[in-house]
Amino acid sequence: MTPALTDRMTLERFRARARRAPALFLHEDVADEIKERLTEVNRTFTTPAVVTPFPEIWRNFLPDARLVPDDEVLALEPGAHDLVIHALALHWANDPVGQIIQGRRALRPDGLFIAALFGGQSLHELRAVLAQAESDLCGTLSPRVLPMGEIRDFGGLLQRAGLALPVADSFSRKIVYRDLRHLVGDLRAMGESNALAQRHRAPLSRAVFNRAEALYRDSFGDDQGRLSATVDILFLTGWAPAETQQKPLRPGTAAARLAEALGAKETPLRTDPGD
Image (cartoon, rainbow, N blue to C red; front, side, top):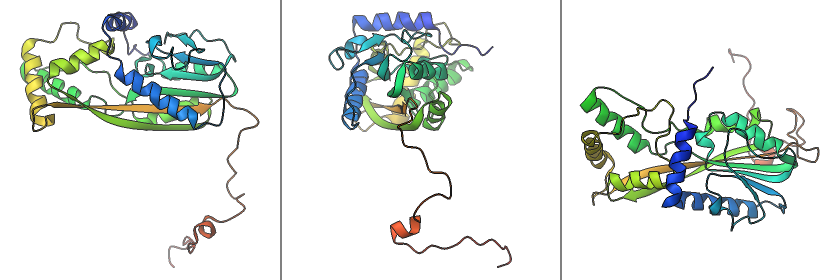
């Protein structure tokens, strides 16, 4: 049996703490981005659902949506929705494919699934300096930052989950902090503290923290001494299969050559190595 990535009880405790003094600007960014993307879809969605740990972000944007937490088993009825949004929580899932499959099953035919999650190079600076500081002072390493999946990995999950017309893309932003304490404070206020099941349970020592901050300034600080943190947000989009959807042509059935469409000269491949 594969060990769990996430300690769900600890994650829920961190999220409850975050709700007392939240800093959910990245969740707001995702909601704005998804809103923009939906305006580009020639469709009116009447029965949306949103999987989110912070439903307050979505109540104004989709007031009629069913809002459910990102539990291992999602509280979604099969075939009940024409839009399912998995909002900035999939990176903590112990079974991300299972989460996407549950989202697909909740869709009607030709319904839209959109997931947003942290991935790629998110917090690579913090991960590097914490590892170096702990190695320098303790001679050991322990997982301090959630490992982030790459877009090529998550793109394949859409097809495994049975979604049609899959698309995976991303956007990146840099967030500048005065010091490491403020960066960590924002992570706490987003409920994104270390909830890894295999994490080291002892708090980070002051010596390791100070060493990490010094390394951060040396490697990733700007000329004003501020610290830059990278956030990559991945977007996964797919449709519940339907007979009305476009289907890709079989190889060799195209009605026109690509070279003709581009106005380019076509050069045949050489088949004889001796030519």
